[in-house]
Image (cartoon, rainbow, N blue to C red; front, side, top):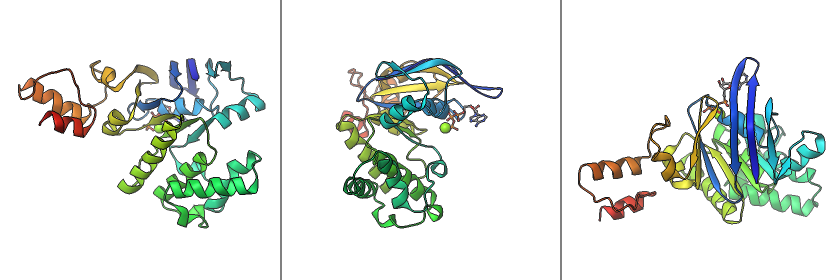
Length: 267
Ligand SMILES: Nc1ncnc2c1ncn2[C@@H]1O[C@H](COP(=O)(O)OP(=O)(O)OP(=O)(O)O)[C@@H](O)[C@H]1O
Ligand SMILES: [Mg+2]
């Protein structure tokens, strides 16, 4: 669906990405992991053409992205990005104006724009903030408004740069629920996160970045069986392996992904 081939990117003298090649398959959930400064945000900003690679190419549905206005418009209808910093995303005076901006630019009818805005605000649990000034929202509220704005565009691919950082438990679950529902309906998701436990449960595939390079791509189990990728192990896996090494659990090959699965193993 989206393919990055040999992407290199520099900010002045800082090389942020070196020869990054990743194939994003339709309908899957990708977690993008890596230390601060590993290049996650820089990579994600290439997926809808905000950044243009110094060398290498991006393909969307097999077509090379050419960076002219038409190609970028098509790409951005296809791929929505929730930025790491919501301040970058919100630019209208009120929440309603901000969330409706994208759908209005798609040339939809007034009724359809209103439906999309109301639906996305409800889905993010912030309908009551509709008429509020974006400027005065709290950080978490800004993040939710930014997410609502991207959802309202109904893109086929959503890129999420640490979408749940700074959200309380209720809103975290709400946002993850929205994305799960979208994914069930075929939307491809790529989410960067520092929450290894969440990523381990959530992702179909993991991409691990290190120093601007791809250190590993695979299913969560493949990633954590690879040894040193400089990311910590999810707690469920850590406990499971510890129990096996101490002879308290028999290794039957059913490595648990979820907390409940581990508890079931324990009987
Ligand atoms: N606007 C910029 N100007 C100069 N250097 C930058 C800029 N943005 C990022 N960098 C550098 O590029 C590298 C990759 O940064 P990036 O923001 O992509 O990392 P990240 O993996 O998203 O980190 P984090 O987990 O902290 O969000 C870092 O060395 C960073 O200092
Ligand atoms: Mg980042």
